[in-house]
Image 1: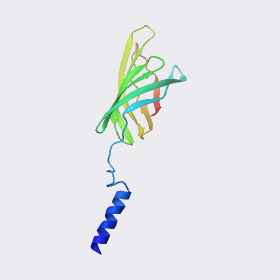
Image 2: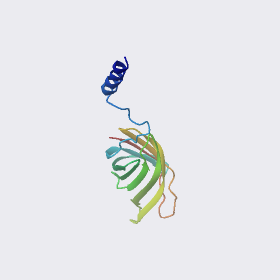
Image 3: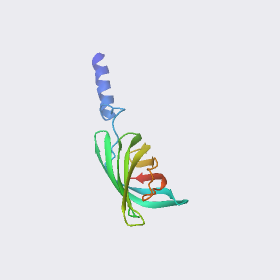
Image 4: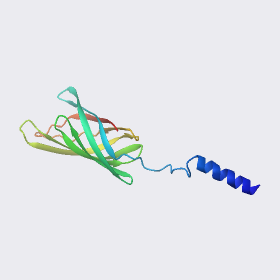
Length: 139
């Protein structure tokens, strides 16, 4: 009887694909993500196409992003369903000088969807950053 029970359990485990994955397993976020970069500037809501290449190492993901409007930057965040991390942005201002800022992000991730908002970047006279930045990406 014990042998039959052991065989039944073995069969059930193999039918389900072996041992269950750990509930704390990181998401697989590496790859190319595309979508929208939305923000507010000068009282207007703006939306731009964006592409981000993500590389993941264990539970940390890093990405380089670029928007169609020539804005670029980086992100580093936790590879988990609830993400948080760092953010950089580089853009040429109207005087043709490069502006670079940094901030933090919070959001959510699945294997196919990545959505995060950016805390406001510190403003300067030469670099008046947009506000309400949001990225909605799909793989």
